[in-house]
Image 1 (cartoon, rainbow, N blue to C red):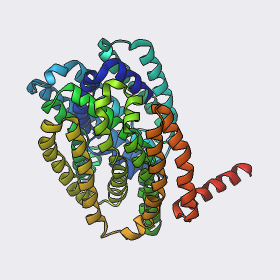
Image 2: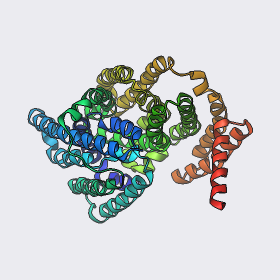
Image 3: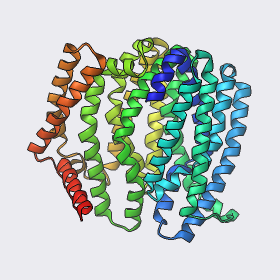
Image 4: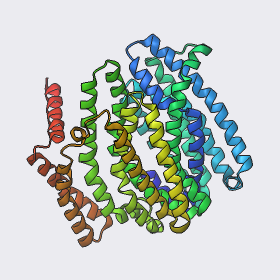
Length: 460
């Protein structure tokens, strides 16, 4: 957040637009290099994490496959750069970000998620981000420093990924895999590749199509609005990252009841936190844009208001799709859902971006999230009691009303863009949770009981 806030004021909307367009292009080819290995690796390694020998075998086979796919990704990228006239104007940015395709393979983040070593991932991220932030403050001062900023990002990613290669020895070794061992994984990996491909199309195509159908400024405005949504989604979705390996492990041990209970708690947490955050981000969209990006991005406010609804929709969709269907090996259903969503997204983008620019892309994103949610509900209701999973959701809607009233009052009465947010959060958040407590909300009570248990363990 700090880095983006600083850089957006230096590079301005068109500079941020160039970066976002190049990253989106590289994101598509990075998807080819990963070919579904991230989610497949988390699922399969989580099942075998108690057997170091089996874990080493799976890890080695997937790492070699990942490197093979990366070679083809670079071949396709070279062909794309030769054929695309639009990309020709972004060769420097695309070339620098292209290095991250190989670096993302070496990060082997999926392995650490599978063994649930979030402490290492958190420490690595904090150290590297702090070093990157310091380098940006020291070296990036002019709009002409755009390439230098990208280079700092690439070097930071490289340092993080190299540390992962050294640290992974704690959990696994490397065994030269056999060809037969590699072939076993191809069918499920290709199935998950289709899922991740459609997800990537859905998430990256807005920026790519904006770059082709509009200009760098509109891409920059959309990037600013999307960044706010992405930051808030990452906070809410933190629980979903933890759920995937745990869900795979539970299902491997054939504990269906525990899996459903885990899913219910996760969905209830998303609703409890996501509903007030979504409401607040919509009301304070102008404040967030000005705080994050500055006055030069004021035209991003309408897009930020629209994308605030994604803050709730995306975590719920991610939970049901990637953290329930995938651990249950329901790749076929996942492919259908993501394909429909991706096609819908492309069609709406083609219709709205030429007319509305960044706002059209934002509308397309939210409508696509709604489409994905409808499709998910159609498929998962065969396996889940939706009333049980989403039950008591009305409690969050009732208790968020004071949050909306306080936020509107703070936004209207306090001139300071920062102070108004602080006052609204300080007043409304305690009121929201007190009301939930008075209603004896199960999710909140479970959380309080968990905190009490942790305190008892520390005292003991």
